[in-house]
Length: 95
Image (cartoon, rainbow, N blue to C red):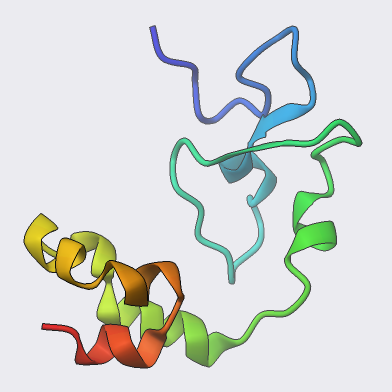
């Protein structure tokens, strides 16, 4: 049985592990995958204030336009360097 991604802590004996989606509730400029998680011995409750230091709308808009995660696997394979390197211009030019 898979853990419930709407509960902050998927592993009862590991409170340092949190799913990020519940922590992002109320943050209109944040999109989080269903099972995205974070592990931090110092605590995870303030993940976004400690780790998301800058938000640039234009970068997010460009990434959503490119949407490489929806590409066919062959296209992803051909463009891994651009994806791994976060080279948005190269992603936009990718075929």
